[in-house]
Image (cartoon, rainbow, N blue to C red; front, side):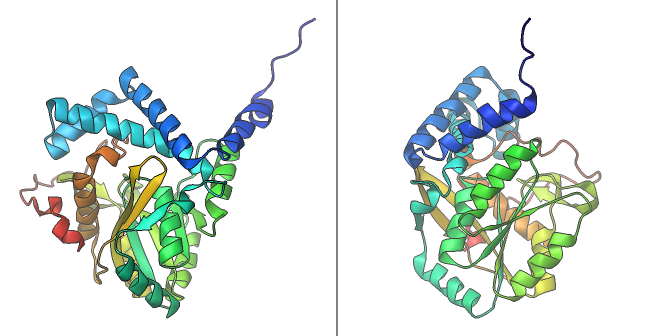
Length: 307
């Protein structure tokens, strides 16, 4: 008589979750290199490669060997992120290897936070966004970061426990739920920082028509909404990987009265400057607003927008 194969709960308990906890013991550079190798393997296997190739051509006009180099690095970056997130709060997590690019400017923002002036930061899925939340927490003030729930609730719980271990408050977004928005507004009015990853396609009921990477798209209006309601400034930022296990934080000059299109232009400028660290795998333009003409204005490519 043969034993029944283990069910999915047993596999989680005895295989998946212990493996993810084991990743937390890796050194940061080891996790990045191993994850980068996994990403390059996915690129070679062609996983979503045709989709990413079309996006790089359509959004940034990249072709040939230049496009292949950017895309290979983008896959390596996402693979590195997949493993790096599990090292948070471990013996050599990313929070131990963060360098601010503009420390005096961040010190000013930190003093503003201590004085009760909050800040909304917007970033794309560029570089290592989890390390970015840790860096803002370290150099500016307490962070509330929005995250979408993952498909696996057990893995999701372990992942967000990792993220929260350094003090970052993780807010899980659910369709149609506005409860966490009240918490964010209270935190902003007390000097906190709300971190929004606002580059991906939002739910239709929350979206505004605009342009992203120069193309018509449904855009996330959260940055302007929170800044206006809490009467705080908004700033673009990102956390880039300079080498395996090492990161730099950039935060642009905060501005008031930011609308959705300005926020999208900020994110587009960051992505155009560092396309090899962007998450091109997302189906960003699967549904787009009808009636928007092609955008002739190319100023969104300029980093002058950020400073």
